[in-house]
Image (cartoon, helix red, strand yellow):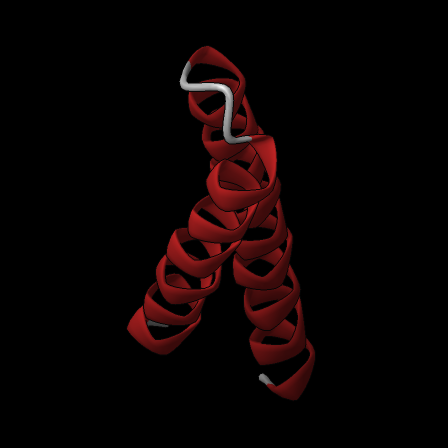
Length: 59
C-alpha cells in the first residue's frame, strides 16, 4: 500500500512539473508578443507555481 502511495505522489509531481514548465513557456510567448519577455516569464512562473501546487494538493 505504501508503494502505491509513493507512485501516486510521483505521478502528480511529474504532472505538476510539466504544468509549471508549460505555463512558463506560455508566459514567455505572450511576453515576446508584447515585447516584455521578462514580465511574461515571471507571470508564467507565478501561474505555474500556483497550478502545480493545486495539482499536488488535489492528490
